[in-house]
Image (cartoon, rainbow, N blue to C red; front, side):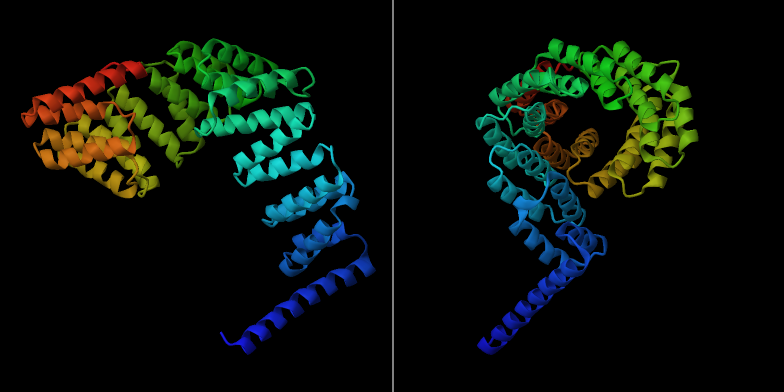
Length: 418
């Protein structure tokens, strides 16, 4: 780029932004407040005017009321300008030391952008300055638990989150939220009895909240208390007859329980009637009937799942699972391979390919598939059993023994039984 061209472009850009600023100033002189300029520009998708107005708003951030500031924030966020909204509230924070709102709003925006670590540091700095509002404590705890769910929070941080939730409980406008979040934190700490009690309390305070009811039922399912898990969902389902999600969760628990339940088939029929083209319903129905040994119905639902979404890896896996039980080995292999082709990170498909290849005597391909499954999901304990079988067939007794030992150790750790 020549110097003359660069200078020309620079001049054009300056003129563009200057003209945008002039438009904003002219609008202000004729029509009123900067808040209204921001809202109008956002509503009309006028990017240049919105950028210029947001720059002016950031410069003058301290002069707006909290209500006006939130209106500016909503307008900016509606057009994907959350970063500008964060800068706006950061400027307000400078002009309002000790105020709570700048911390809360910036934290919410950072969470919306997925920047949980930054939100966590922001909340921590607010608490370090002596702010102790229940909403702040709850927000800090929620971010820590969000980090914990993705493996990015250490145990002491989760324990601190529980302490913050206890402090927030007395003054919280909605204590059910506190109890629910506390249940999640305690579950991460392995304190299952206390976690269950918190979930019970949350769902009793807000019985219409399905997320609370589901957390409670899932708690019972983790404890292998399938009857109680099912009972919790059935009580909720009775009061919400039109909910597809509730019925799907209930059917999923019936599948997890691995035994026939008299309500299950009725729920399948209700779900199909509510939405015959819903993929999740068809997959659950296929798994349910396959577990019950009704392969004809299982095949029908898995075929429907593939028709609904031919490029869905789980749909092809479900059909492969039925075909292998029907002893249609080559057709099942084709479905599992298609599943893995569609999603090369789907470890269960790689495992099933390895098992069939091993069964067919293709040891090299079997090993490749099984090692892929293990790399994708190290917690998939059955891979060790299959690798042990493979090495035994190859006459490598020491490696076979090592894999069988890994299988036993991981199975015991996960509470699995072959």
